[in-house]
Length: 240
Image 1 (spheres, rainbow, N blue to C red):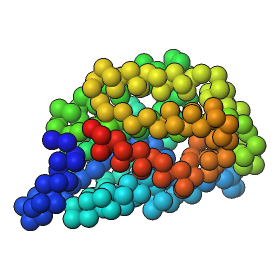
Image 2: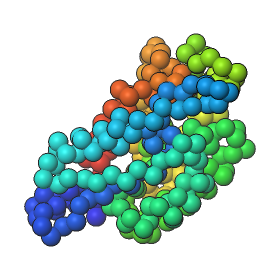
Image 3: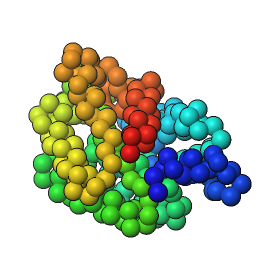
Image 4: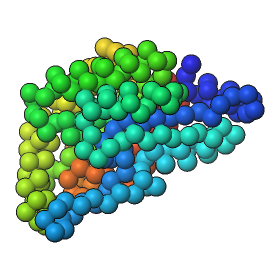
């Protein structure tokens, strides 16, 4: 059953239908990590889950279906990758029996270069297949772009080296290859695609400084840009 049908059923009969549940499986962006800074020779992260796209999505759905309040289970983890996501799916998500699973991986997986694509796609297939076998509707959301220049990376001998590494991954084609591979898996596994990466790329190609839209100058979108994820997810839910 499509998620919109579940929302409509809840709206028509609130007493006899359970609260619709969305689970999110992803990395630091999904969890709600924004700024990153260096302190006492350690990398520190600013966590702000109230500003993450999960909460913005919840608000938009409440606006559209006010009589069908949605519960969100956020299984995003800082540093998460698709293979670990598969383990978290089995451990944390499946016991919750969500109606809809939103998956977003790739930012950290791409660290392993072209050699890591097969491991990445295998993990995505495992996530998609397992969730669908459990009767869960699945959406794969492509992530944002990495930085394309290093001007906004914070100071420190830990942070600064990440800037050029991420630029090379983004502009050298590695990250594009990961996203293309994920899109192909979605086609083959008949998984709904919410292609936010395509929007980021289009903005970049039209002259937008997409790096300025990253709160840490590397890979975490600003709080405002999490709205793009939320709106695109609503658009995807409405059109599938």
